[in-house]
Length: 224
Image (cartoon, rainbow, N blue to C red; front, side):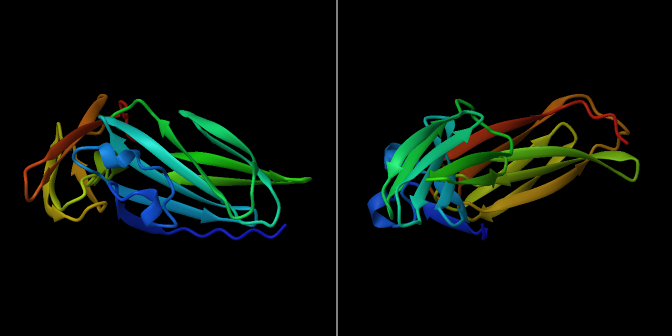
């Protein structure tokens, strides 16, 4: 079977309802969040289904909003799964979109993948949709004999924000980061090995002062 995969990043405001955008049919729960948070969607398309995954922050927890559209001309069974849970939909009509919102019950999540399995008759198609750590991820690396902490932070607010990244070894402030945009910094620990620790990001709206703070852990890293 031929397979076409394509990826793109789309930014929408979390408060926008599903009815206002044909591509973002991930429910309207985000409309109740205060403040609203940006939607950063990952999209994959194949023969039977197209899939969209959106991380959101609602009531302090990260949710994975996942939708799948039947692209075929026959009913399709669609199973959506993640390490945090999922849902199965049977006999999804051609052209119809189904969606689920998976509560990770975590304030910050590491990178991972969602798996969507579509079955129509004797044909089964599996699609994996990766997502990055949200809204902060830290990866230790060894450069020139010293451990560096590579930190990526995403502004989850629906407005421009100042994003401050801090670690035990230093950090950086980024001014006026656009909604949904990611910033990165490599912090040199100046050590050949570091104990387990965490990186912190705080996003504060440029106007209004709303803020959100999240941390991401990293393991002890002996260096290489």
